[in-house]
Amino acid sequence: MKKLNMLLVSGLVTIEHQSRKMNERLRELLEATGRFEVAIVEEFRNITPEFLEPYDVLLINYDGKLLPTQPARRFGEQTEHVIYDFVAQGKGIIFYHSSIWVDAHWPDEWRKLLGGYCAMDQGCRRCPKDDHIIETTDPDHPITKGIDAKWMNVFDDLFTQVIIHPEAKVHVLASIFDNVDFYRVPGFPPAHHPVEIPDGDLTKMPGVNQYTPVIWTNEYGKGRVFVTSIGHWEALDRFNFITMFVRGCEWAASGEVTLEKPDRSGDNRLKLFPYYV
Image (cartoon, rainbow, N blue to C red; front, top):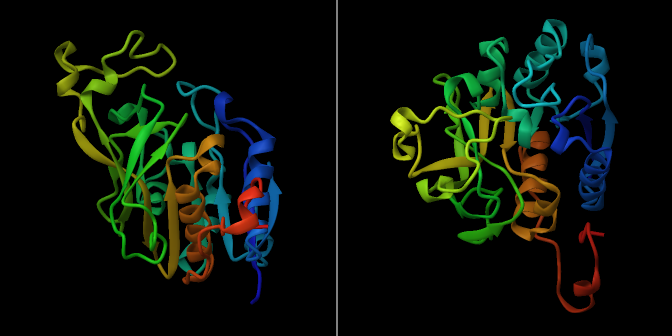
């Protein structure tokens, strides 16, 4: 089977996510499946259609800032329009973890491409709880087939109050229940990630005590968008997450899913990450 060519786009990322080791770990996982060849770039301004021509899919691990309250550095209009055309003409894009955050100056078309996004100026927040039970919303999608109905993710971010673009074609694959009790902890909200609490009442925060999507797909023109808002280092040791991630990448790149869960039978239980090897 022909390998899929992926360009992993990174560079300026908030401090707690800024690790070249993470990009290499993503590449190691994806190439271990046998389905991908992955190249990595850390500067993505002023690109051209010709630059992207060899690739089937982009993986965006970029949010454009060091601290959540800083203004983000966009890719620039030239690059952004090239990306829109790349996807709309039938190719794919994946948004990884903190790349779902946008500032007020990110264009509406970028938000439509994401399908669902977070914006600090629109009430989105990071939940202070680090460990979460994730619920598979659609067990029949090719990306989620065979995934547990409920599964644990640890030491990760829950970005909640996700905003769904009114013109997007979002299909939610996994969600977390954003319980108000998660916020009854000392030090919330932290100074580096301010949150408005109406009348000081946590139960009045938008979206609290509701499900919030954490993994979804979107359609954009003829192309495919896969988004995961979770994805810390530890998530890549969770077999449900790994499986959904590599399948989501394959689906975005090709429109089909052939990858299974890593095989842990027999001596395979002795394998370390990336498990697929």
